[in-house]
Every structure is written in structure tokens, then in C-alpha cells.
Length: 327
Image (cartoon, one colour):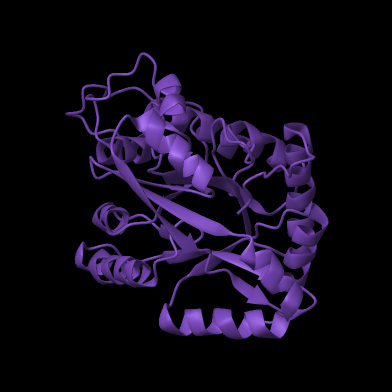
């Protein structure tokens, strides 16, 4: 999962060029999926329009699945998101993933800019997500006021839909409506919450009558030639969880960003600094750590999120990770 990061000396164009290089490298190394994130007005992460970036990445590759990690649906019309991804799935059948995120992808001012002209009371997030799936699969119910419209073009193989989250409520929603669920450890490293969310999802997905639960993890992972080198990169990563007086929570990657979010929210706020909890080390050590996670959490897939400032070292980490043999 790539966030198109720009180091201090790099431009936004440099960051996007790195993402293009990395997806081609990931395909050559045998990775199964490559997802790009959505961030707005970020000082470091340059991927503001995943659907546009995905179209270019699909054109630059041949077989790897490419998707969003994820589209921030609260800002957008489900119908328009479905149209975008139906176009992508028509261009490259069987290679498109549509991961949906519940967060804003930016600070309060960017949310206001993204939602200009929207009526926030029209739909809940759950309603939007259900409508999106209906448009993707051309399954709008007859009683729906928009029954009869189609999000054309209708691809032969629709994009696969996923829900990303960092909370119990996102796990509950994914289980309730029967979607694959990705818990983003790189955004919330609280192990007790991760355990609770994954357990609820796996237990209740079957209870809701769906066939097979598909829990996944997005882990912060750094592999290096030496343990010392990996530990140095991992020590540079922190997670800052902000809680507003209204109860809403957000994740950023610096204290400065947390304080700015609090100021823009016009609410009282607190924040908590979490260690990055990065799975790091040499190939052997990372293999042992990930196998322990897999033994405790029988997830279907694991996404690697590698946040190293040096692009060359980031590429090397993915190369080393791909050399590990998994049972």
C-alpha cells in the first residue's frame, strides 16, 4: 500500500514518479495487489486522487491488481465513484480494487473544500457504502428513488469492494453488510483494538449469513540488511491519534499536524502519541514476527506499508520482503 510520500527535498511530481516505479517493481517481484492512498493538502503524501492515479498505474503494468486504499466516500457521490471504477474495471477487467475509507483524508478545511455544495444530512456513510455496492453491481432496488439508472459502463468484471478501518465500528459495518475488511495497523497500532475488531468481524460475518469472511491487515513493515538499520528507520515513525470533544478521532503522523487539526476543528481536543509498532528487522526476523501475527490472526492477506524517507531504501525493503518464503 503506497501513500506517494515526498521527502523534504522532493516535489509532488517526484513522489508520483516513485509510485509508478514502485508498482512496476512490485509486479516484477510477484506482489498480488498494489493500492494507493487518498490524502488532501498533506505536507508529505501526494496521492490526492487515487482513481486518476490508478488509471495510469494500470496502463503501466500488466497483471498486478491495483486499487484504492482508500477512496474517502464521505466526500463523494456513490454514483460518481461507481462510474469512475466501472470505467477502470472496463479498461482492465479483473485487476481493479475499490477500497473505501471512512476518514477524511485531510484536515477540517480540506473536508469543507471537498464537500462544498453537499448536503451532509442526505446519506449516512453506511447508506453511501450500500448504494455504492449496488451501483457497482447494477443492483439498485426497485423501491430506491433512483431505481433504473446505471453507472455506465457496466464492466464484465466489476471492481472488488473492500472496507478499510481502524475501529470496532468499521469492523461491525463490514461484517453487517458482508464486505472484506482491512484493519489499518499503520494508522492505529492499538493491539487490543485490533484484536477486538478482527474478532468481531470474523465472528459476526458468518452470523450475518455470508459465506466467507475476508479479514486483512495493513501492517507497517520495514526490512533492511541489518537489524540496526531497520530499527533506525522504524524509530522515525510515530502515530498521533487525536480525539475531539465531539468524540470524533483522527490519525496523523506528527504532533504539528495534530495541533493544526485541533485548531481547524474549533473544538477542544486531546492527542495521544503511539509508537509506530513497525514490524522491522532483517528478513529472518520479519518473517518470524509476521508468522506470529498470522498465527494469532488468521487473516486472508497482509498489506505492507513501508514508510522510509529514502526511496531507494524503501524499494530495497520491498525487495527483501519479497524474498521471504511463506508457508
